[in-house]
Image (tube, rainbow, N blue to C red; front, side, top):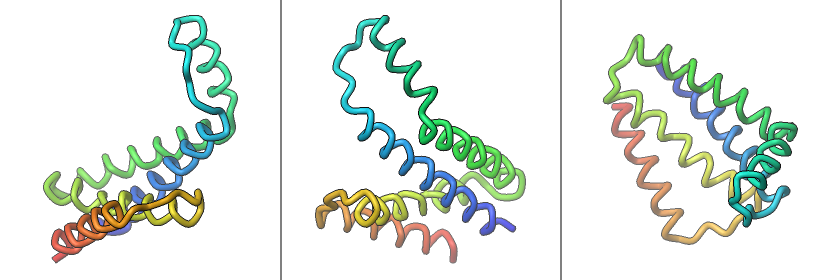
Length: 120
């Protein structure tokens, strides 16, 4: 059951963060940080379906993480759920067409090795 929860957390977190990235790239850079301008940005983002879906998936991830903590140690849960970093890097490269430097790729590979070591 622990690994099923890890899979749910990794999948939900990865999907949520990909959706957030997509939404913000579509929205564009926030340059005006005055309170009124930020209120307008927040109002637009709250109506954005990608942002709303990402919030829902982050809620799923949070609930699954709480469930995982009820049956596993924190020293297992946190490193194991770092699998989402690896997935996010891969999907950022292939779905969002982001450039992933060799250094970032190596970092993601090292995280994958860490998750493997936790699994042993």
